Image 1 (cartoon, rainbow, N blue to C red):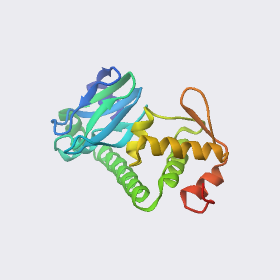
Image 2 (cartoon, rainbow, N blue to C red; image 1 turned 60 degrees about the vertical axis):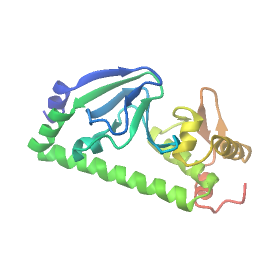
Image 3 (cartoon, rainbow, N blue to C red; image 1 turned 90 degrees about the vertical axis):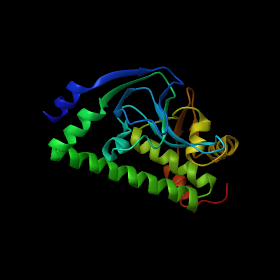
Image 4 (cartoon, helix red, strand yellow; image 1 turned 120 degrees about the horizontal axis):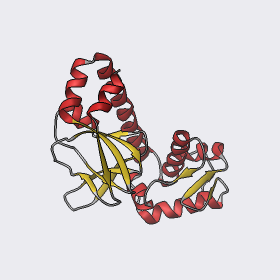
Length: 209
Protein backbone atom coordinates (compact mmCIF):
# COMPACT_ATOMS: atom_id res chain seq x y z
CA UNK A 1 0.00 0.00 0.00
CA UNK A 2 2.80 2.38 0.96
CA UNK A 3 4.78 1.58 -2.20
CA UNK A 4 1.67 1.85 -4.36
CA UNK A 5 0.98 5.31 -2.96
CA UNK A 6 4.41 6.52 -4.00
CA UNK A 7 4.14 4.89 -7.42
CA UNK A 8 0.88 6.70 -8.08
CA UNK A 9 2.44 10.14 -7.57
CA UNK A 10 5.75 9.36 -9.32
CA UNK A 11 6.74 10.85 -12.65
CA UNK A 12 8.99 9.19 -15.23
CA UNK A 13 11.98 11.34 -16.12
CA UNK A 14 14.51 10.38 -18.81
CA UNK A 15 17.94 11.94 -19.26
CA UNK A 16 20.41 11.61 -22.13
CA UNK A 17 24.07 11.00 -21.29
CA UNK A 18 25.71 14.20 -20.06
CA UNK A 19 22.47 15.96 -19.12
CA UNK A 20 22.28 17.64 -15.69
CA UNK A 21 19.43 16.35 -13.55
CA UNK A 22 19.79 19.34 -11.23
CA UNK A 23 22.46 21.78 -10.12
CA UNK A 24 23.86 22.52 -6.69
CA UNK A 25 21.68 25.18 -5.06
CA UNK A 26 18.54 24.35 -7.08
CA UNK A 27 15.28 23.86 -5.20
CA UNK A 28 14.90 20.16 -4.45
CA UNK A 29 12.54 18.60 -7.05
CA UNK A 30 11.91 15.50 -4.94
CA UNK A 31 13.42 12.02 -4.66
CA UNK A 32 14.75 10.22 -7.73
CA UNK A 33 14.83 6.44 -8.10
CA UNK A 34 17.07 5.14 -10.89
CA UNK A 35 15.42 2.52 -13.10
CA UNK A 36 18.19 2.15 -15.67
CA UNK A 37 21.42 3.93 -16.47
CA UNK A 38 23.62 5.76 -13.99
CA UNK A 39 23.96 9.17 -12.35
CA UNK A 40 26.92 10.85 -10.70
CA UNK A 41 26.33 13.17 -7.76
CA UNK A 42 29.13 15.70 -7.32
CA UNK A 43 30.27 18.92 -5.67
CA UNK A 44 32.02 21.74 -7.53
CA UNK A 45 34.67 23.90 -5.89
CA UNK A 46 35.19 27.63 -6.39
CA UNK A 47 37.89 26.94 -8.99
CA UNK A 48 35.65 24.59 -10.95
CA UNK A 49 37.20 21.37 -9.64
CA UNK A 50 34.64 18.59 -9.21
CA UNK A 51 34.52 15.84 -6.61
CA UNK A 52 32.22 12.88 -7.17
CA UNK A 53 30.35 12.02 -3.96
CA UNK A 54 28.77 8.85 -5.27
CA UNK A 55 27.61 7.00 -8.37
CA UNK A 56 23.94 6.00 -8.42
CA UNK A 57 22.79 2.90 -10.30
CA UNK A 58 19.54 1.00 -10.89
CA UNK A 59 17.42 0.56 -7.76
CA UNK A 60 19.22 3.35 -5.89
CA UNK A 61 17.94 6.80 -4.93
CA UNK A 62 19.34 10.31 -4.82
CA UNK A 63 18.26 13.79 -3.63
CA UNK A 64 16.51 12.24 -0.64
CA UNK A 65 18.68 14.19 1.84
CA UNK A 66 17.51 17.55 0.48
CA UNK A 67 13.92 16.29 0.23
CA UNK A 68 13.85 15.14 3.85
CA UNK A 69 15.76 18.15 5.17
CA UNK A 70 13.73 20.64 3.15
CA UNK A 71 16.74 22.54 1.78
CA UNK A 72 18.19 23.22 -1.70
CA UNK A 73 20.18 20.50 -3.47
CA UNK A 74 23.61 20.39 -1.75
CA UNK A 75 25.27 18.87 -4.84
CA UNK A 76 24.75 18.52 -8.59
CA UNK A 77 23.62 15.39 -10.43
CA UNK A 78 24.38 14.36 -14.02
CA UNK A 79 23.44 11.32 -16.10
CA UNK A 80 26.59 9.46 -17.16
CA UNK A 81 24.61 7.12 -19.41
CA UNK A 82 21.12 7.22 -20.94
CA UNK A 83 19.08 7.10 -17.74
CA UNK A 84 15.46 6.54 -16.79
CA UNK A 85 14.27 7.57 -13.33
CA UNK A 86 11.09 7.79 -11.31
CA UNK A 87 10.72 11.17 -9.59
CA UNK A 88 8.66 11.34 -6.42
CA UNK A 89 7.85 15.10 -6.37
CA UNK A 90 8.83 17.10 -3.32
CA UNK A 91 5.39 17.98 -1.90
CA UNK A 92 3.82 14.48 -2.25
CA UNK A 93 6.99 12.98 -0.79
CA UNK A 94 6.96 15.32 2.20
CA UNK A 95 3.29 14.54 2.82
CA UNK A 96 3.94 10.81 2.57
CA UNK A 97 6.70 10.81 5.20
CA UNK A 98 4.60 13.08 7.41
CA UNK A 99 1.58 10.77 7.26
CA UNK A 100 3.37 7.43 7.29
CA UNK A 101 5.71 6.88 10.24
CA UNK A 102 6.97 3.54 8.93
CA UNK A 103 7.97 5.15 5.64
CA UNK A 104 9.71 7.90 7.60
CA UNK A 105 11.66 5.29 9.59
CA UNK A 106 12.66 3.51 6.40
CA UNK A 107 13.94 6.78 4.91
CA UNK A 108 15.89 7.51 8.10
CA UNK A 109 17.46 4.06 7.87
CA UNK A 110 18.49 4.88 4.31
CA UNK A 111 20.08 8.12 5.52
CA UNK A 112 22.03 6.16 8.14
CA UNK A 113 23.54 4.02 5.38
CA UNK A 114 24.41 7.23 3.48
CA UNK A 115 26.19 8.63 6.54
CA UNK A 116 28.06 5.34 6.88
CA UNK A 117 29.08 5.64 3.22
CA UNK A 118 30.45 9.16 3.80
CA UNK A 119 32.40 8.00 6.86
CA UNK A 120 33.92 5.17 4.81
CA UNK A 121 34.81 7.65 2.05
CA UNK A 122 36.50 9.95 4.57
CA UNK A 123 38.36 6.96 6.02
CA UNK A 124 39.62 6.03 2.55
CA UNK A 125 40.83 9.55 1.76
CA UNK A 126 42.54 10.13 5.11
CA UNK A 127 43.84 6.68 6.08
CA UNK A 128 44.41 4.76 2.82
CA UNK A 129 46.91 5.30 0.04
CA UNK A 130 45.89 5.19 -3.63
CA UNK A 131 46.27 1.42 -3.90
CA UNK A 132 44.23 0.81 -0.77
CA UNK A 133 41.44 3.10 -1.98
CA UNK A 134 41.15 1.40 -5.36
CA UNK A 135 41.20 -2.06 -3.76
CA UNK A 136 38.49 -1.05 -1.30
CA UNK A 137 36.38 0.46 -4.09
CA UNK A 138 36.56 -2.77 -6.12
CA UNK A 139 35.66 -4.93 -3.13
CA UNK A 140 32.70 -2.73 -2.22
CA UNK A 141 31.48 -2.64 -5.84
CA UNK A 142 31.60 -6.43 -6.11
CA UNK A 143 29.71 -6.79 -2.84
CA UNK A 144 26.90 -4.66 -4.30
CA UNK A 145 26.80 -6.33 -7.72
CA UNK A 146 27.60 -9.93 -6.73
CA UNK A 147 29.72 -10.76 -9.76
CA UNK A 148 32.17 -9.18 -12.17
CA UNK A 149 32.22 -5.41 -11.85
CA UNK A 150 31.30 -3.02 -14.63
CA UNK A 151 33.12 0.17 -13.77
CA UNK A 152 30.46 2.90 -13.50
CA UNK A 153 30.98 5.84 -15.83
CA UNK A 154 34.33 7.20 -16.88
CA UNK A 155 37.48 6.31 -14.97
CA UNK A 156 37.99 10.01 -14.22
CA UNK A 157 34.69 10.04 -12.33
CA UNK A 158 35.78 7.07 -10.23
CA UNK A 159 39.15 8.73 -9.67
CA UNK A 160 37.40 11.91 -8.51
CA UNK A 161 35.26 9.89 -6.10
CA UNK A 162 38.43 8.38 -4.61
CA UNK A 163 40.19 11.78 -4.56
CA UNK A 164 42.77 10.61 -7.10
CA UNK A 165 43.88 11.91 -10.47
CA UNK A 166 42.84 9.91 -13.54
CA UNK A 167 46.48 8.98 -14.14
CA UNK A 168 46.96 7.71 -10.59
CA UNK A 169 43.78 5.64 -10.78
CA UNK A 170 44.84 4.05 -14.10
CA UNK A 171 48.36 3.30 -12.82
CA UNK A 172 47.01 1.81 -9.61
CA UNK A 173 44.52 -0.40 -11.44
CA UNK A 174 47.33 -1.55 -13.76
CA UNK A 175 49.45 -2.53 -10.73
CA UNK A 176 46.59 -4.58 -9.31
CA UNK A 177 46.22 -6.30 -12.70
CA UNK A 178 49.98 -6.99 -12.94
CA UNK A 179 49.91 -8.46 -9.42
CA UNK A 180 47.21 -10.92 -10.55
CA UNK A 181 44.64 -9.59 -8.09
CA UNK A 182 42.18 -8.45 -10.75
CA UNK A 183 41.64 -9.04 -14.47
CA UNK A 184 40.39 -6.31 -16.79
CA UNK A 185 37.79 -7.57 -19.24
CA UNK A 186 36.00 -6.07 -22.21
CA UNK A 187 33.25 -3.45 -21.84
CA UNK A 188 34.85 -1.78 -18.79
CA UNK A 189 34.42 -4.89 -16.66
CA UNK A 190 36.81 -6.04 -13.96
CA UNK A 191 36.96 -9.52 -12.42
CA UNK A 192 38.33 -9.95 -8.92
CA UNK A 193 40.70 -12.94 -8.93
CA UNK A 194 42.14 -12.68 -5.41
CA UNK A 195 39.73 -11.16 -2.93
CA UNK A 196 41.88 -11.97 0.09
CA UNK A 197 44.82 -10.25 -1.57
CA UNK A 198 42.69 -7.20 -2.36
CA UNK A 199 41.45 -7.11 1.23
CA UNK A 200 45.05 -7.15 2.41
CA UNK A 201 45.88 -4.31 0.01
CA UNK A 202 42.91 -2.28 1.26
CA UNK A 203 44.19 -2.69 4.83
CA UNK A 204 47.80 -1.89 3.97
CA UNK A 205 48.97 -5.44 4.75
CA UNK A 206 49.95 -6.54 1.24
CA UNK A 207 53.57 -6.34 0.05
CA UNK A 208 54.30 -3.05 -1.73
CA UNK A 209 52.98 -3.12 -5.31
